[in-house]
Structure formats: structure tokens, C-alpha cells
Length: 279
Ligand code: AMP
Image 1 (cartoon, rainbow, N blue to C red):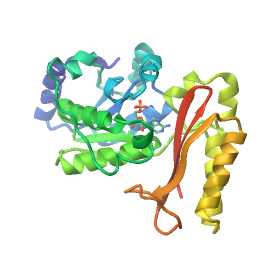
Image 2: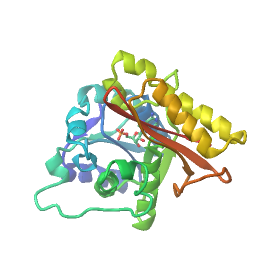
Image 3: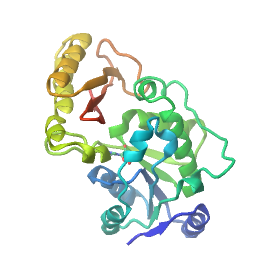
């Protein structure tokens, strides 16, 4: 079993030993309730780095909805069992007061890229993400960090953050891992009822159809309108956004030129799902 550490001092001591031995350190930040998507990041880290830390921290600062924070699945023992065979060295699972001790006063905010899409629908979310990621980079002193493309906008925010603050960490974005029916793996999928789970793949299916249409010359606005209608007709309760954006800067795209990304967020059965694909 990997060692489970809960305080920064103990983590620093372990990492200092690795660094003294010249070993590269990789970190995979997570909120736990691990699935194959997370494990793919761990495997990528293991390929590049002699030492791998998986952090498990349900970060209260990135939840704009208290109910979502409360209901977020917490499965540490199962998570540790999943990580053991992958050769993870340390699970860093601090309590909130270790990350945000009394007097904590600094927030990291990445302007521009944090604004639209998730940023518009979840006010303060990316400030919470940027703050905790900057802290996790500082705590772990990692040389390499692995994030999923599943959270495309988050990946762009983290890359901007690392570049802007000259953090000595190489950020790698790994492909989205999906269920056989196309649903992007997510810790929140566990909260879907059987009925909602059966309908959920419609989001990815509609996005793929729209992407194919756009690549084939369909008007972006028409394709996105059709995709929204298709998702609602499949049984989703609400589509918060489904849009085509430039891949890196996430600017609106009305005609397909350079690499673009289609991104969506939609509610089904009280669960908020997000997805994105390359177009
Ligand atoms: P989370 O625990 O949801 O905060 O996710 C931790 C990391 O795992 C983030 O970098 C996510 O983008 C990544 N991740 C979550 N789901 C997937 C997935 N289906 N495929 C690849 N990476 C994922």
C-alpha cells in the first residue's frame, strides 16, 4: 500500500529524500473517488517519474454549491486499494485545516481563461482550483503534474498558472477516459440513477454528431442548436452550455479554422456532467 500522509511537513521530508537522490517527482492531483480516468494519469506519471504522489483533497474553495461539496463521494480506502498495484509512493490526503490553516489569506486568480463556460456557471470555481493547484505544487515540489483533458478548461487554467508564476513543474494533459458507451468517466457518475445513467451517453453522442457536422461544413450555430435540442430530447434536464471554442484560449468560434474544442455542461437527474471533444 502507498504511504498515506496528511501533513505538509511529513510530505516535505519524504520528497526531500527523493530529491536528494536525484529522483523525479510526479504529482496527480485528485479529489478522490478514483476511477480509470484518474488511474490513466497515474500510469502516465509512473512512466515519466521515479516517484509518484497522488493527492486526494476535496477542495472546499472550488465548490460554489455547498450541496455538491457535501454530496461529493469520499472513498479513501477503495482509492488506496486502486493505487497500490500502480506503484504510487505516497497518497497525500490532508484535512482542510492543513491546506487552509487559520489566517489563510491568499487566492490565485487566472484572468481571461477562467471567465467563460465553467467560470461563468460556477463563480469562483477556478480561483479555488488555481489556489489549491498552486499550493499542491508548492507542497509536493513536483517536477511533473498530470491533469485530464476531461476538464479541458481547468487544464488551460493550470497551464497558464504554471507559466505565469514560473513554477518549475511540467504540466501534462492526458486524454479523457470513457465508458464503453462514450460517457466520460467522472466521480459524479456514481450519483446517477440507473435511469439517468442510461441516458447520460447522449451528451457525448450529440457532441460527436455536431462535430462531424461542423467538420462537414455545417454552420456552427446550427450544429450547436441541434446538439442542445438533442441532449434535452434525450432526457437531460438542462444544458448549461454547449459551445465551440478555440482550443487554447477558449474564445468563441463561429467558423472552423484552427483546432477547436467543443465543450458542454448539462444536468441530468440532479447531477452536473461536463464533457469536451476536439473538433
Ligand atoms: P477530479 O478528482 O475530478 O478533480 O479529477 C482529478 C484529475 O483527473 C483531473 O485532472 C481530471 O481532469 C482527471 N480526470 C477526471 N476524469 C477523467 C477522465 N474521464 N479521463 C481522464 N482524466 C480524468
